[in-house]
Image (cartoon, rainbow, N blue to C red; front, side, top):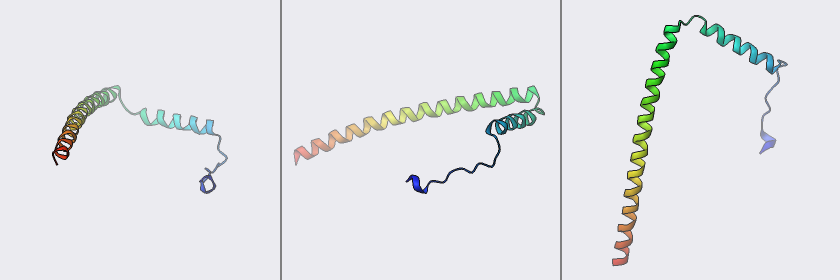
Length: 84
């Protein structure tokens, strides 16, 4: 399995320098965003997080209900097999 693996190419660039350049790019990208825009984005992310939490809770409830239904169906099937 390892014989067919592809090793990443080293383009001669130092990884630490690459990381520093990426951080500088990020700083440059965010430099033109106002604090108000960050606040709006933060509120939108909070709302999205809350919505995802609600979806996860509903998913957990549905899963629990399905497990109860599955167990009930198994019991009924066993009872029907015992009757035959």
